Length: 230
Length: 230
DNA sequence: CAGTGGTCTAGACCACTGG
DNA sequence: CAGTGGTCTAGACCACTGA
Image (cartoon, chains in turn orange, cyan, red, green):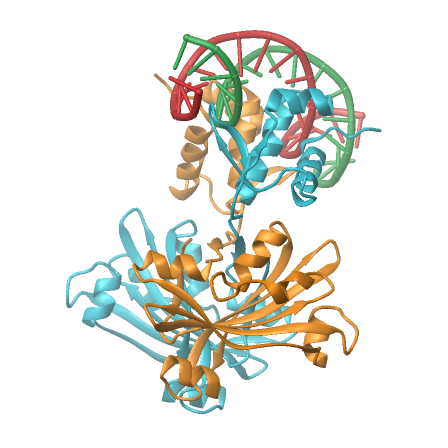
């Protein structure tokens, strides 16, 4: 009957913190004591406590014990959306529309982002992501041709460059930057809005083992937002 | 010498996935096999695999085994910054400056956000967060006076409302929305920019056990961005 | 240097679910 | 209904670090 799993204990301890039984900065009983109190093994308590530490609620130090954080670390996890999925989730039909597509030498600021020498050959692609014909987002992407030469032959009218690259190097690492930017002429036209409109923007650079693959800027239509739980 | 901890195994398996040894969709050997291969207990392998599942690299199902995800779930964890910390981290001196402060009946859209009846009494506070005198962000906050009546007496010239509330209800839950918005007259003046400039914006609503405490909109100075690793 | 958390082990039982 | 992952246990050793 008494469910002694780590999730139950985790929740119980969380509630004791939230209720104020253990105030911020206060020390929490050691794992051995808690194990005795809850009638389970220390392993189980340990697991619950490690999860709470991951959540940013407590701070653990060897020898010093476990304390409730003075200022809880607020953190949220965002799933970086795949544009096609966002559009299809809203019930619309997805279609990528290529606005620009050419192979050129890297401009300096892009070469720097991809850690390449000046003048390296890059594939430049500008795509409008359409949902039922309306532009949902505009993507400006540069691909390192040394890392992914085949992209010049990819059927980018059917599959977006992003998904094509994910298939090629699925488990690469990356940087993400969220910001707000002003619509330039191209975006203003695509979104049927004024130049200078505020657009939610994601910058992303991707690499695998020190080989930089691609960098892109994704500008969403006015009014778009990203939602999460704290 | 052979370090058999779960982190080592986690990294090893990650590399086998990234190298393409196990392709997306393919099934991975069971925990027992891997334990034998790496010469450790199943518990350790299990831990490594659970972490990889949290990372979004693999998918695990009882009976069906573990598979490499077809489309890796891209997710990042953002630490929600405390404005004072951001400013102090840049070496500047933090000071909150109150632009507006009054107790009024809730406008409808705010009452809705806080799940309150129309006309409930709220505390409305507009704060400019200054770093060495320059405005870093403008905060527009509404506090449910039924949940936190003492805020009317808080020394908000010294401590920001956010930090005051964190001290009061440290471990509340919340919603977070990231977006881009256009500077209104007040923000344009504060940031010394034009009306309509694109501002990175965080909306946040906080509650504890079904009692809604506060909702706020935080607009950052032009050029601000949030950075994270994928 | 002693006490705390971090981790591993071997074994066990359970829950779920695909064949 | 059998095989997989999910979890718990009891015990052990280690690493770190504050008193």
